Length: 193
Ligand SMILES: Cc1ncc(C[n+]2csc(CCOP(=O)(O)OP(=O)(O)O)c2C)c(N)n1
Image (tube, rainbow, N blue to C red; front, top):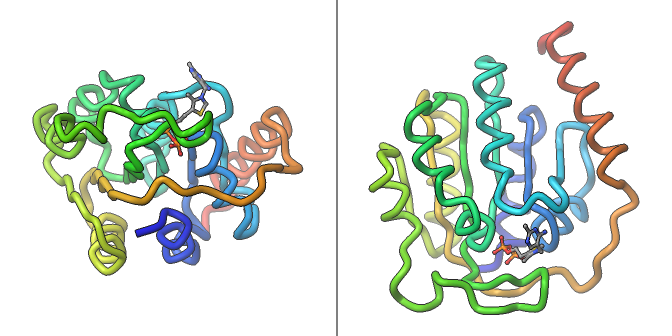
């Protein structure tokens, strides 16, 4: 299964949801489908997409917040799973694309490729109630649709191949993206849809 295909599959569902992604390949794949003002690509701060998503979700309970993460990023901030489990906002969906690799910086193997580290098991062990581990597109689509509909925090760990975009380049740098994303958020509060 390819992450690009998975993101493409859920892209229509992301139209009205604040989305926070990690940097690199994942951000590029979403951006390449067409940027929307509700997408925030967290550059540099590896591991913190879920922390930002948690803050947004707690702050705005009426929004379904989606975090699109990577295995390397989650491994860099493992405490996030315990924090998510503790506060568990019902409006947060955390999708972790596990490609067993630090793909965006050269494709070094991550711990999940050793057959030892199991992120879904770690999420469950942290106390997160709804965790799905999927490795085909059908199961991925089903898990994400269920997560979007569920009135409880959900984590989906999707095993994907370690392949990324052919080219990198986004005409949207962090400060501009951050200002526009904040504006989107503010305007939604003033005029909820
Ligand atoms: C604290 C920190 N260390 C290292 C980096 C460099 N870096 C950027 S993306 C990345 C790999 C991310 O891996 P993963 O989350 O698995 O996503 P993938 O690139 O595989 O899609 C690394 C090491 C960074 N941005 N911040």
